[in-house]
Image (tube, rainbow, N blue to C red; front, side):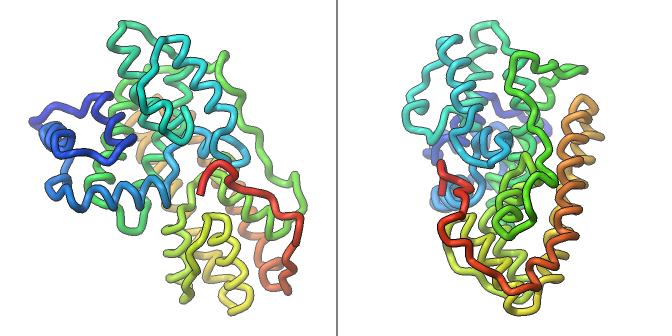
Length: 311
């Protein structure tokens, strides 16, 4: 993006929130985002990415359940109202803590000469992680890969040397390791909640793990796809291949966190927190072989809803 202006927060906000029209794509190209020259490919790419695979909501990354419309959604909306930020997309987005709305809120604050350090610190915790999830899609559209990178870099460039303490923000997520009996349901629940696992597993990424292990998965909700992955691994004798795929995924995320922290030392504390969650996931994976190699019993009537607020 050298030699061209960096994308503004308001432009980034629009690109996360909506399928861009020709005029918006023109602005994006002028701002140095590559891959937007073919508008006909952008619309299906936006749908596949943000509706079917990577859920761009703060609660999806910060809530220990991984559910959408968690406490951070109501918390974000309170901040918006207090700052008189009321864009029309607030009524149409799946939840107030949508990445596009949050970036728009920061743009609104800059435009009014105000600031919300606690909100900025909260966004700095999870939006870079959401951006990695976009980049880790098996076949990300170049335009949205560039959007994810530009959003992360724009946000991190505004990070202070010492991030705010978030004393008025949402409480930190507590570790969930060892709290529940190790069953297939608890494994799936933890792995699908980034605040517990340290990474985001999209439908496409789960499908890629399955294909690497020599399996194919049916289409369904992210919870159903994840459960089908482990059940199929147990039934076909591919448990270790699936677990190795997840270990490799965890290693790739850990390297991404380290890379960002090296480039942006102010984010080092966040990186360490996410890496600690990955360490717990590696411990979890080491204990999974036993339950997956054993005959699986479907827990009728006791399944927890992983994503009651999303697909």
